Each structure stands twice: as C-alpha cells, then as structure tokens.
Length: 132
Image (tube, rainbow, N blue to C red; front, side, top):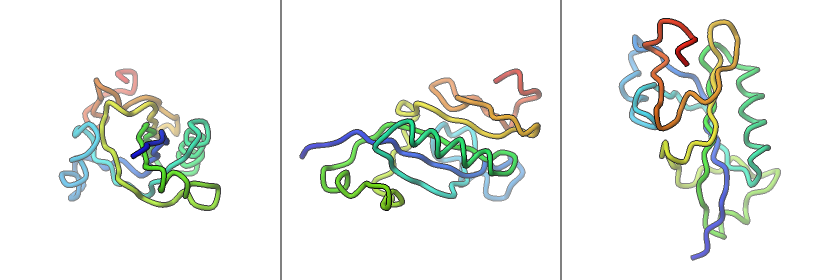
C-alpha cells in the first residue's frame, strides 16, 4: 500500500492541573500537559497547516494550542483531501517524534512556539514564561 505524507493539525485548549479532566486529557503527546482537543484537520501543505494553527490561536482564549505533525495516509484517504474536505479524522498519530511545530497562547496573549518536542515542557508547572 502506497502512503503519502500529510500534515496533521490538532487544536484545542490546554487544561490546568486543577481541572477535573486533566488526568484523562494528559494521556497523549508528551503526557505532561492536558490537551483538550477541539478540532483535527489534515493538510497536504505544511504552510497551510501552520497558518490554520496561527489563526486558531489568535482567535482563541488563553492556553489555546495547536500541534502540527507529519504523518502518512493511504492513497485512498489522501485523494479525499482537498479544500472542501479537510475535516476527516483518520488514524490520529500522537507521536511526539513527529511534531514539527507547536504553539499556545499565554496569559499575556503572546504566542509561545515549539512547546512540544522531545524535551517537552510542562507549562502547568512553570513559574515564569522565560523557562520556555
């Protein structure tokens, strides 16, 4: 089966440690933050995926996040991806190794980039933003 590279986008809101659902939403990505996912899309182009994240974060509340990762879809699903059909959720990949961009909005309404990687930082435990 032939596979095609695509860009998986997850957007949502990072939950605080005192949120009752923190534990269940911290079981993906780096297992250090709780990712309340609000939407997933797949894009054929990386710049389109990153732009979606940037727009989503700009319009969102504090702790709105976006994660962009590379993954692969079969030819059947890849051929379905076009401008009107990005919303399908196929097999979602939560591998931190595949993350190529991440960002979230902090309390100062600033966008903090690349907070998810192989050395992921738990933003819930930070005393100041400079640690990122």
